[in-house]
Length: 218
Image (cartoon, rainbow, N blue to C red; front, side):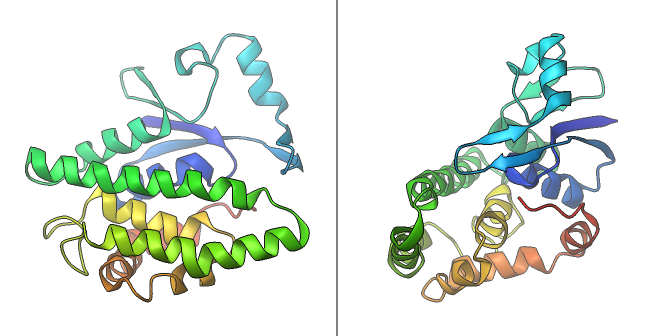
């Protein structure tokens, strides 16, 4: 049985958890306890993680999480690498090398969008309110409109089968932001992206995971 190791939050491991749900794969969802002290300052209490790091138990993942431990003990670090590994395992990388490249490109675009959002997320007070308003009504809308050109249809982003990029788009719009309503509203001018997100959200295995997963603040 595989083991996915991360903290008890959604964060960098949630796309992989959704992929595992879609693939119907049994695995150990190991979660280090995490106490948020000051999110803005990245101050967190994680004694069990720190102890395992000190004892050298995390060296194969460069003292970071998430990482995936395979049935034979092989350790795969890096969240995006884990996602691509699982996508390949569950046949979610298209039917050709070109499909795979296009799927990967959409995923990388989403990663760029997330990085672009980080400075906005760190703002405070009125400045943050203004920043968020501009992000959800202008910046995100414009980025999604550009990305829309790379999607094939309003059911699947690449081709005519579920793929990693569908799951990544779903996670980005419905899981990544605190203001999920504003994120979905930003897709009003991108019917393909909205359709893909809604299609993933209708999958029974995804719905069951969202309903049964541990409830966390992040």
